[in-house]
Image (cartoon, rainbow, N blue to C red):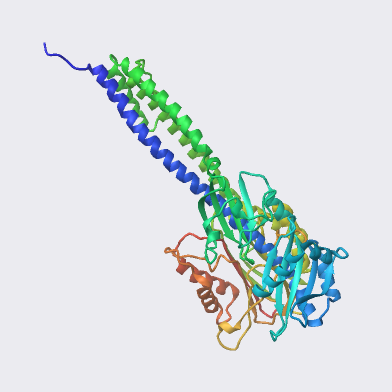
Amino acid sequence: MKKRGLSIRYKILLLLTSIPLITLTAYLILALKIFEDDKIAYVFDSTSSMSGTMATQIKTQLNGILSTTKPIFQEYLLQQKFTSVAESIFRNEYNIETIAVFKPSSTGAYERATVLEKVPDGATQTINSLGGKFSSYMLEADAVGRVVKVPFQDDRVLIFEKVSNEAKTRNTIFVVVVKMSEVAEMFRAVTSQKMYLISQDGTVLFGPEEMPGQKLQTVVNPKFLKEAGSKVAQGAETDKAADGTELLVSFAKAGFGDLSVVTTVEKSKALGAVQILIRKSLIFFGILISLTVIISLFASSGLTHALTDLFAATKKVAEGDFNIRVKVDSNDEVGSLADNFNIMAAEVSRLMDQTAEKARMESELQTAKTVQETLFPETRAKIGPLSIAGYYEPASECGGDWWHYCKIGNKIFLWIGDATGHGAPAALITSAAKSASTIIESLNTTPAKALELLNRSIYDVSKGRIMMTFFVASFDLDSGELVYCNASHEAPFLMKKTEGALKKKDLIPLNEVNNPRLGQSRDSKYEETSVKLNAGDSVFFYTDGIPDIQNPNKAAWGEREFIKALIAANKDCPKVSDAVDKFVVSFQDYRQSAPLVDDVTFFVVKHDGII
């Protein structure tokens, strides 16, 4: 009798054991590698985003401070002293402690000329506390023009700003002491991610406890600090800390002075989920292999019957019955296959339920879109001598743009705003703006006061996380004067009536005033100005989504084509409804049904001259 080798039972055991072992091992290695790479990419993305956001916030805040102090500087350069206007501006800025003026003496050294301070002798105490550092700061400011220092290891920031007179024959250095408590606290916050505000040489200005005043190189020495001449504004890299710990480092230059924001996170902490996944995968891997061996040992009878049941069940699934379950009494690999089939069917059923839930959410978003559309006025209107026509198209189910008009007494108010981003969060902000404007309308106020009230409402709703640009104008029916106030919104174009066809030079941007965005600070103040609106004149109000319109090749429409289309639509001073229709045709022809990258909103107001 011919000697047989291993029985088929053991061959099945070997086959069913080796195949899953090899496959799952390869899958585990590949999956863990992909997961680790993906996790690192995610951490880099989040930390880069955090660094960029914080850098932008610091730049915005510091630029806002310089914008506030610029009138004080100019007033001093003209009057050679601080006037009551300058002192009033200074007193109203709670976060500015001191403004000191330094002029070059006959020896060439800078000497203090005068000072604005909220604490008596505060400037003197500040300078004395710095000792010799202050002179080096002045030399640096004289050389580069602008220097930012945080020498006190608290929330006070020194800004040195060198200003030349018109003839550029005499320099003046203004030293501003500013408190940036909120920013300093954010850098001190204890989290798995550590943030540092550093200067070009690596000195930590704001950061975790014990770090301000020290060099970042004592913790980590990233490549971008070694490449001082690099023009890369933002990036991420992997470095080793001084103690050998691997760190994921992201940085973003603030664009103000030589400041940069650096975010670090320990690689081991970032990949903590990977270790958990490895442990669970190994446990699952071991259980699965053990079950495979046990089931294979008992594989014998009932195999054909079990396969038949499985075949019938798969037909049911193919017909759409995902609630089918297979009952197999055998304890072999076919039994495991039946169990896996039941798990698969249950998972498919769950996914079907999720699909239904997603459809329900999409339906709710559609309902929200319908509700949001009620926030907008009629797209065609005639109020007194003004004809109004507008257009609105959101980039998603819900948008962040809003426009409105209303008549209050002998004035016609015109509103347009753009919340940060688009989608449901932005839509909630526009709803808050609409609700607030309804109350503001009853106050019969000015555009500047209206924006102050609206700013408080937006700030209280969003707590500074979502902001909104805005433009409000009021047209006086008696005088024909258009008073307007701008909160960092795109300046509308005044199109004066001309004898011939409209030309580019006839487009006058209403940009005489520009104020902070709504929601940026609860105590923001707003200025307004006015312009005369004659019969035949038109004003084009819009949001920034129009120049950003893209064609199927993702090429933006751009400012130039936008202006050309605007001139073409209004060249013969048509009715506002015709002008709007022509303009819509222009950008829709370019867009070719491509998805919008931002909400598109605009409206045109024309003075017909007849009430």
